[in-house]
Image 1 (cartoon, rainbow over the protein chains, first blue to last red):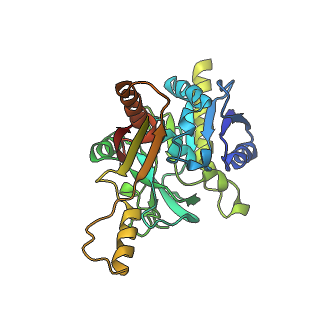
Image 2: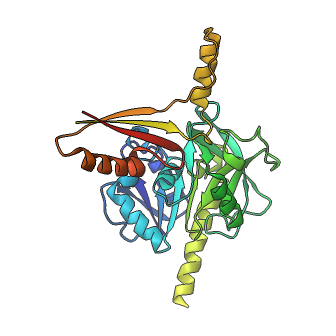
Image 3: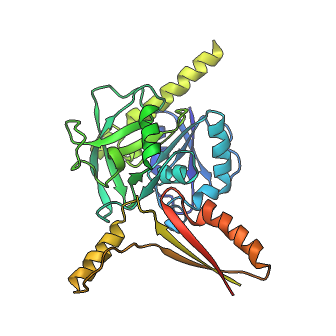
Length: 236
Length: 80
């Protein structure tokens, strides 16, 4: 499977994403923000970092870069897109995902391992995660507090678009386990069509046990399995 | 011509910066501070053109780019 990992000025988790995909035995290449085509990519990763210095708002400038037009078209045609941290912020700014990420409620930059409960398993981003598994994955952000108006939140719940929520190690969705004040403990969501997802935690930094956890790999394995299933269906 | 744009967080969005500044003001002894909202101020210098065209273009830019309607409100003013 071929992953394209976008690279904006001040992306800083791009190499980690490439490493994680390659370590899982698949191919990944970096794609500069001025590119207008995604080439033969089967999936796109928008990595973490501080694209364009996070000037104006996080993700606000990156979303107007040439490569994002190609991502928009790719997503419109059902292509798989995963936004991690700053990538999640870019997807929200681009309108590919609903809501927005605002300043953490305590104004602090949080860099720590957190726990995630997967809320919906029948998606290309979560299908390989075992149902009773609580994922241990790091976060590193100052603006990860998910916000959406009441109507949007109801839609997210009704359409089962909430993929991951912050929880304690036992899977309880508590206020104390919510590192940034996100609405409804939301850590990650997908679009209605379920082909675009974003999350604040960094699964690419948790794909090898030497890093303290390899739980993140199940998110990439889910994408890989979804792609394989699609290819098999096409061939049949 | 110059445009002045003020971007503020929407009422429904938690504004921890505003709350922190408010607390600091209280600690400093300033009484009667009901609320503080921290936003952004942008000044856009324009090269000629007429006022109405400029307003229309900037209003669109505010909506599309300079503010995020999900979390922010804006006020646009065209000054001489």
